[in-house]
Image (cartoon, rainbow, N blue to C red; front, top):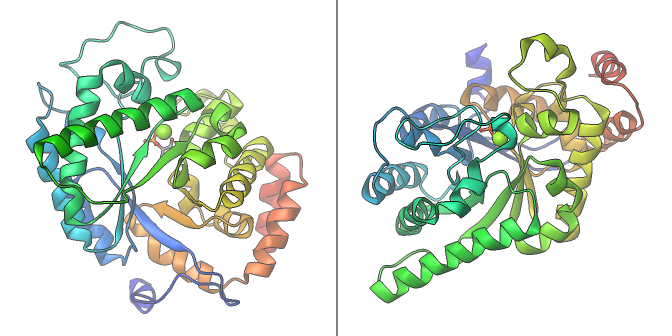
Length: 321
Ligand code: PEP
Ligand code: MG
């Protein structure tokens, strides 16, 4: 079967009736780019930088981070690379960064909240990213944004860092695209407003499902309630894509749902522009997309959006695709 899939290496991710999308990969370390390139990824849609900070006993220096980002950007050549700023907290802890015990770590001091509070950590990362930007096609993405104020504050810190670099005569790429994850319901709901302040959205379904349905993504006991096909989640996704497109920005997805065979026709039909997934899912996803018509996918999306239960939606998909 791998031989079959290898035939579509180098081909476009395009439907039978000409709708072209981008299939990109999720990575956690620079080593992961090898697998992405083997599977013909069209770029990186999510580089989870927290792994640079984990499994060690001190903060990574600007130089260490710069080297990692540079390696990924150079490895991808002129292909787009979306690097997400630090998303620590929740289940991901750093042994050298003492944070008070929290009742609800997933609703707590994490990701952009922590970065806006501990600005030195944030600035060091942004400096490393900007310095690395001249080696490829970098796009910077902020995680866990839940309000307009947070987004504007994060952009302000980035501008401060740019000014610092300017005054030191250090170069960085011009026109770096700035995006944000949509993984908190309050952000999805005001995505029409947020879209005016970013170049792209990437929908993080792993957390968006958890926060929208109040179902812990790690809790086995309630795992049956954690569904990508939850109608409320699907409607939010559609809303985000439409709101992004109204402001002429591209909308991607980097949660697990983007690589799910049953979700792909729906997401395609909703108009998603970029799908970011694990390396091994890329060629199967391309094969599927090349077998579909965009017009049919739109009908599937419309139908699904009219349904009221995840079970009903899954049953319909099983009988349709
Ligand atoms: C997500 O929440 O969907 C996502 C991609 O981020 P992470 O899985 O790293 O929380
Ligand atoms: Mg997330």
